[in-house]
Image (cartoon, rainbow over all chains, first blue to last red; front, side, top):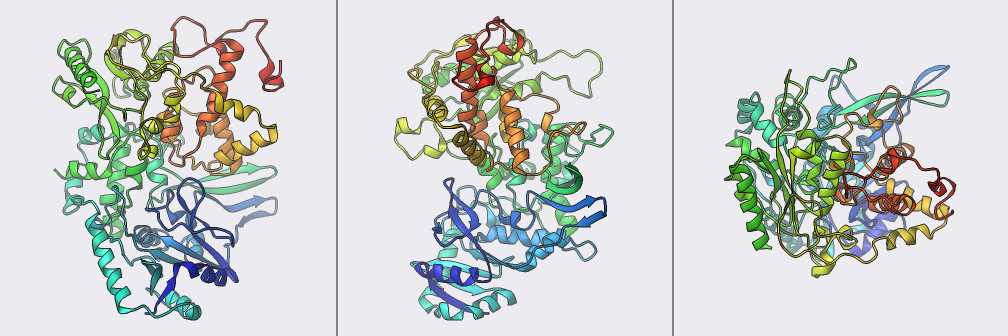
Length: 336
Length: 304
């Protein structure tokens, strides 16, 4: 494990070093709060953000991508991209979500080459949270403001400095490669890191997760429960597209001029067309059935299939729902 | 405002207790501060949950087509419910529009009109009182409810003098600048359809963007597909949009859809003298034709 500290004012030097042979993405204010965007020499990093509006899953599993083309000569897969990418400022909840997506897309039997190649060429530097938002609940779902899972390096802001700690071999190699930019963190800085994390954890809201799977299984057939919860839902895709773990997608063949292309695009279980079959029949006729799918998939089926709850408590679905539904309330309601 | 809320609760309880309606659709506190959410009150007791404050911004008319749609599992006769809706004037205009477009029968809905002081934009909540009011409410020319069945007494905010200043500034740009501004906004779109789902006018059972025979657009986030969706959705709002701002509030990406839909509102008002959602009797401009109708929207904005 490598450790190091760097002054925030000197981050530009690290970015410059990375950009010599790769791309560097970080939190940049583009007018609507911080978003994870490619850092150019004149860009100003914004470090006082709760989280990005869109989850970093898009860097690995985009909203849509062309995966194959078909011309007269036959069908061809789109080649995977190469070159190092560094993501800086990913929040620990979103980094944890990547470990869940890994289980879906880098399965031993079925591996997604596009997702895997992006994961392999990308170094994730997460940034510990100091000021969790009112909608955060990471500590209830296996996360923490300084959670380490899913990232290669954890960075913590301490005063005017960032204290970095490598978490993987790739992270250690990165810090060794750029060793001359880092100083040794002082004992006081290390103590401050832990103190800040426990202070931040106190501000995170709590949700009753214990025994949730059994309770969910118990009310899975109770349509009334789900119809009540779904009554307010407007059936848009905000919660799923902003979710760092939602990974359902559809495949579409589109004609562009004389060529066909196969597009993979994210889908959303909240849309009425989600399970619509070619015949026109849809087994999920009511809103409540789709709401049940969303909640059960995250908190019940995922634990059966992958051993984890597919929610990291980032709170995006709570903060951005146009009908002000709150997954924390839904969990609490079905727990009773 | 407390006084207005008490009157609202008393009215709702009376409507439910007397059996005049089965459901009062209003607002209740949501889980976050400065937010309310839809309250589906079906008993006089439940009506105690109703609130009225400066955070009741959602346009509840968006729920109505669903409530008046015959459930798929019911065969034979079905009696639609009687529903009372707590409305600001913009929401009431949406209901009038839905009645006009045969999505519900006027006799099945009781419009409870609330005095409106303007809704707070939560993004601006740290600012001083008048600066906190949402842009759409600052531009509202009829904050006091008209055409309500039951009018809750109270003070509404003063009407805006000129609501189209931003549109006029936009119109003054060159076509290339307007296109650039439009593309810049729309490229933020993540195609979650929150704007469509929150809009009372978007009740189509099958939206053109999701049709597959024929398919009008790709499924991804190519700019061309984003533009096609938004241009299509906006044009379907011509002569129908009541400027309630539901699409803008719903958008997680902060897209300024209002500027563009308001341009359509202004064009329809100036060219055809039509204001949607005010009267049940006048014909919508898309349903009528007169030989002297202006065609300048074809040749170019502002040209006669």
